[in-house]
Image (cartoon, rainbow, N blue to C red; front, top):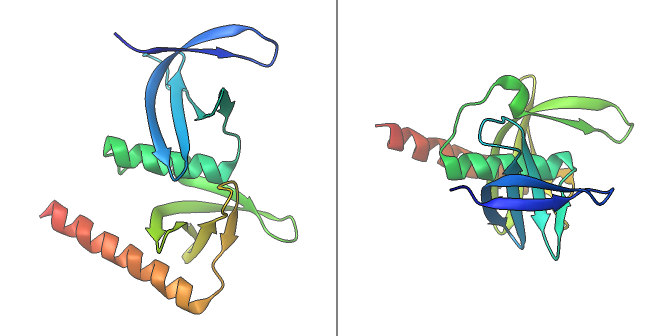
Length: 157
C-alpha cells in the first residue's frame, strides 16, 4: 500500500498524492509526490512545518540528481537533463547537467554549454548557482568529477 500525502493548495483545497520518496540534502528534507502510480508527473516539496513547493531551477536540478542517485538512474532524455540560467545581462542559456558533486563541504553542479564544461556552486541558501571563477577551486571540482568517472568505470567492470 502506497503512503498517501495530503497537500492543501493556495485556495485551501485538499488533494491526495502518493509519496514517491523522501530524502535529505544538507539541512533540508525533500518530499517527492505524484498524483497516482501511473502518473509521470512528480512534484517536489521542502518539508518544513508544512510542505513548500520547490520552484527554483537550481534546487530542482539538485533534487533530480539526488533522486537519480538514490534510484540508480544514470540515463535521461536530453530535456530532463537541461537547466536554463540567466547571465548577468539577463541572457538565458541552456546547460546540460553533467554531475552533482560535493567537494570540501560545498555542493557543485557541473554544467556544459555546447563543448564547454562549467562548474557552478550552489549558494549557501541552496536556491542559486554561481559560476566557479577561482582557478584552484575549478581544478578541485574537475578533479572530483574525474575521480567520479574512474569510480563509475570500475563499477562497470
